[in-house]
Amino acid sequence: MEDQFLSLLAYVAEQERKKNRQRQAQGIEVAKARGIKFGRPKVVIDEVFIQMYKEWKSGTITATSAIKQLDMKHRTFYRRVKEYEKS
Image 1 (cartoon, rainbow, N blue to C red):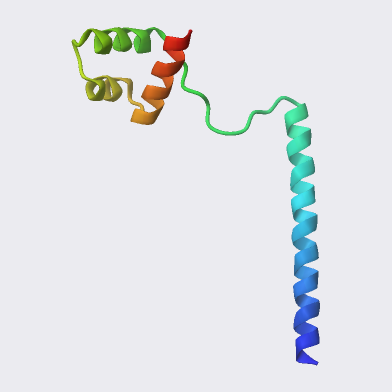
Image 2: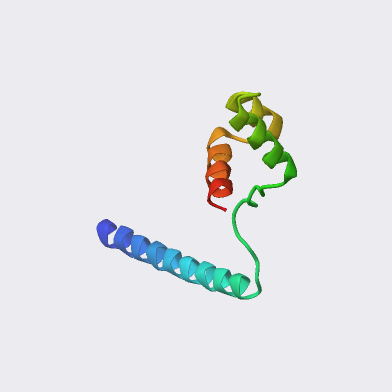
């Protein structure tokens, strides 16, 4: 008897989770249709970055110094370097 009751509760909880996921997915679709963007904003390549990039490439400053002056993480810095070099 107790096992059946626990099974029933587990079933009800699983169904509630499925409903929640479905409602969440619908909400995300509606938000995307309205043009709402999710996630962190992308760090743009601006004039300050280009100046630091040129100084870094010429050997005037180190990559660590450029990263600190730009106030970004090293992975972001190298990702932006790759994007800048491609363009």
